[in-house]
Length: 274
Image 1: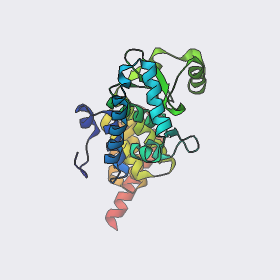
Image 2 (image 1 turned 180 degrees about the vertical axis):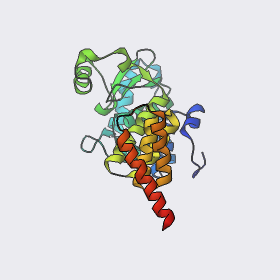
Image 3 (image 1 turned 90 degrees about the horizontal axis):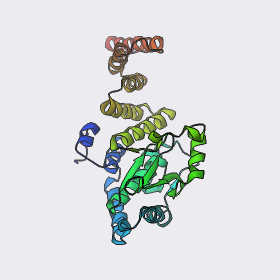
Image 4 (image 1 turned 30 degrees about the vertical axis):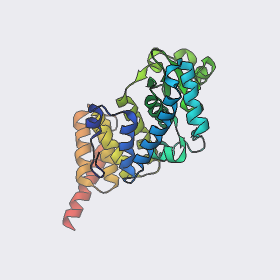
């Protein structure tokens, strides 16, 4: 895709792009000069090496072990436990450069390399902690934040307690494979929250804009309006916030949104008169 041309993610998704390519588009939102070609070249080299080793011809558990060793031992990727909410953890190019990420982006690294090696790879949208499935059917469930190790019952109990409250709350849907769109939305929400923590309104606004495109959810349009207001873009803010109220029956935050709309319109009027 041409550098500098903004691609709608909904269109890129419809064209059949893989999750790693979609994530590289997102990376360029923040860093137009992000080293996407270097990331692709790394995935190609790593995947080719595993393919040449015949990893895809072996049973799923062996495939998973070889992939995990390749990613986390040979190339030394690891989970960023000390600064989990660093926005760079959700930037796939930064993850490849730093060898540091969170479950979702490390999972995408595994998926990108595994697919290039001829393996069946699927993301698993476990609540609060993304997982990866290697192999056909039920395959083998692995944890990208635990050096790609297989998720045995003990590990699943730990994740269940941490993210669901109790192991008995694990449902089949929690361990189901998810599509590219689900992974992409999850990545953008992570980016949105990370940049909001840093009050980086411009970048958070772009993440919201991407989420509006992908989901059509009016809550993301409201949040886009809030970031536009913080940046002084009164007309854009008012349009999004008014659309939110128009499409949301009796929202709990109605009074706060009305105040923001009034603020946006005052700012626009003051700018016109100055």
